[in-house]
Structure formats: C-alpha cells, structure tokens
Amino acid sequence: MSTNNQLTYYQDQALKIIALHDKSNPITGLAITKQLNLKERDSGKEGADIRAIINALRCKGYPICAQSGGYYYARLNKELSEFVTSFQGRINKQQEALEGMQGGFNKLGLSFSEPDSSANYPEALRTSTGVVEGIGTVLHKEKKWKIDSETTYGRKYTVYDLGYRFICDCPSFNYKMTCKHIKQIKEKLASETRERQGKLLDIPTQRTN
Image (cartoon, rainbow, N blue to C red; front, side, top):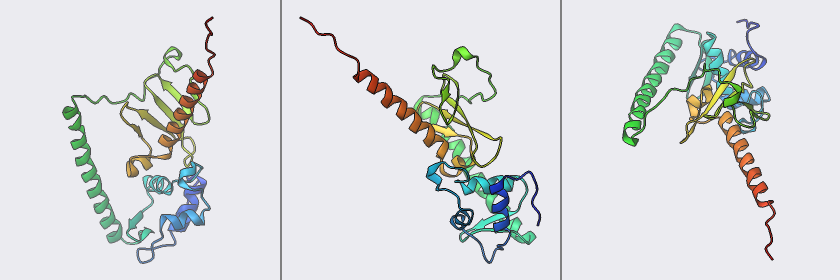
C-alpha cells in the first residue's frame, strides 16, 4: 500500500498504522491517537478527532472498516462488502431519524429553513465585531461561523446557531451531535457575555444631593 501527496500528515500516519491491522487484529481509535501523539479531543488542537481523520481517508477511497474491537484495513471483498452493507444500514436509520425529526417542526409550530452557505453577505450585515478572535469569521447577523479544519488543510466547517441549538457540518457532529467547533463558539460567546456584563457593572452611578 502506498500513500499519496493529497493526504495531510495525520491522515498519512493514521493510514500507515491502520494498514498494519486486519480484521482479526483491529486497532482502537484511542490506540491510534496515542501512537500519533495527538492532543486530547477536548483541547481543540490539531488531529484531536481521529474519527474525522478516518472519515477523510474513507472519502478518499481507503477501505478502512470498523468493528467492536476497532478499525482495520479490509483485505477481502467479503470484509469490505459486509462493512459497506452495515454502514449503509446505519445511514438508512439516520435518514429515517432525520425525517422523523423534521416532522418535529410541525409539532412545535415551526418551519425549517435551510441555511444558505453560498450567500455573500455585505459588510453592513456583519456583526459589530466581524471576527470571532482565534476561531472563525462571523458571516452574518443570523449567527453563522466558518472555522478552519485542524485536520484537513484548506477545509472549512460551518457552525450555525439555529436559535434553539447549535449545529455543525463537520464529520464529528454527524457522529456525536456535537463537536469541538461548537464548543469553541459557545466558549467564545460566553466569554463575550461575561465581558459585557462586567462593563455594565463598572458603569458609575450618578449621585443625587
């Protein structure tokens, strides 16, 4: 097996590790993380989300399968076929759940509107800060952020504040329904709120004689 220049450093190294393991000897995501000396997931540092790395490798055609014991590199047609069938089954179940959740808007008397990720909003519609420092750029006043991927060079993910919850279009969110990008945005917004509250407390009161 040979890797190519289209892989990031962590993708390349993870692929080399997984390729050493067949179905009879899988390797866990935690073991891969330790071998690559990746940072903890909650730290938000580069390479923290091994699932995102593996998802990127699968998207590029590498037959990385998984079972209860961990990940392995498929050697046989039967192995890959069984995993693809199982994977498709999970996708079908998620699709059914998604369609059911969409029906929840009717129960709440709401309607779902697809975020327009292609819109080019003028500067006048941006928030007063315009930039979430060290995290991403605020695209418009409806609270939507573009954040650079820490595992795939040049890739950007979008975090949306729907008013009642945050969502993200990164692979990790699809697995866990939350992600480090959402956590970073929430922490930044909480920090800004505390700062505003602090300024309000510092406003001097007028004394009356």
